[in-house]
Amino acid sequence: MTTNEMIDTHIDDAPRAPQRRGLLLLLLLANSSMLAVYMGVGSVLLPMQIAAIDPANKVAILGLVGGISAVFGTAFNPIGGALSDRSGRRNPWILGGALASLALLAFLGSFRTALLVGIGWCLIQATMNVYQAAVTAIVPDRIPMAKRGTASAVVGLALPIGGTIGVLIASQTATQPRTGYLILGALAAGSALLLSALCRDVPRSVPAAPVPARQKIAAFLSALASHDFRWAFIGRALMVLGYFCVIGYQLYILDDHIELPAGLTPPAAMAVLTPVTMVAMAVSTVVGGVLSDRWNRRKVFVGVSAALAGLVMVVPVVSPTWTGMIVFNALNGLAFGCFMAVDTALVTLVLPSAKDAARDLGVLNIANAGPQIIAPFVASAAVTAFGGYTPLFLVGGALSLIGALAILPIRTVR
Image (tube, rainbow, N blue to C red; front, side, top):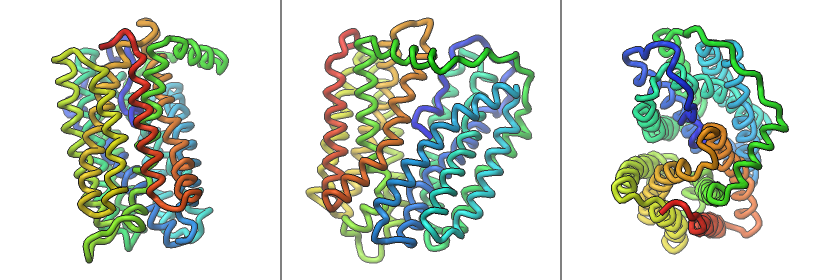
């Protein structure tokens, strides 16, 4: 799953069926339960399980599992979208993906080797991304163009809601991971059942012929030939890479690097820090978007928020304490939320061609998905090669700061 795969970039004509009352609430529920699985498993349960299996090599194993599973997720999202497009139906893929994920999650908690855990999480990433692709496609199918902005805003709330719920469930079941896996899987399956029952499939027109790989590569290179779009792409990729290098290892950071208060376990600490991050992210997303519109300034918000994300990485280095982590998570959430909100607006202003806007925004997805694949490998290498988490924070901070500098060459946006 990537951070903006949840926001559809279709710009074609009106949906094929009227919007059903309550559809946005169902979409919010479906996306929130999906993100609860991603965040609860990826941030707490999976690192805990790997640490229990091989505590000496947990950093390297988590990096390998995280990187390979991200490849599976990135590959199966477009595969799932193509399958639901060609079948002309969404619900079977939504329901099938969620039920398959529930079955796999039921087994994941019983695995006792790193290899089986890795294989299980890769398969769950595959099935959940089939589910995600079909859910995301409901927006252009059923939501009128005039309400797409509202729909994107509502679906965007799934990140703070689902992320917080997922981490809270995972932290409460950290000593019984099988229970946590089952609860998270049941949430996704229940949401899929509700959505499928209350939002029936509608007849869809015959899809366009698939685009050959050579044409897709040519389109990618064509978009990056545009000066301003290329620099926006580079800035986004570096910012996302810096953010996910650190965020994926937060449980181990709390366990090995931070002095927690007596009686506070790393999973319980995650249950406190995640809402702090998500609330800060939600606030800065709204405030940054509104102010950038009012002042008609994009680069300053994007650049400052990226620079802030880089600078706050120093906080846990100079203050490896519980207070330092709270401050770090709040400031990091503010920075990342503002960056993603305003940078998305900036990118729409530097698209190479209006008629190819959807294609070029799809190219931008690579700046989100690619770094999330690379981040676990980079993070694992930084921790193991330099011996500790201080180098990890410095690497993440440097990437974000370079990402801020990448915004400066953009010419056509203030």
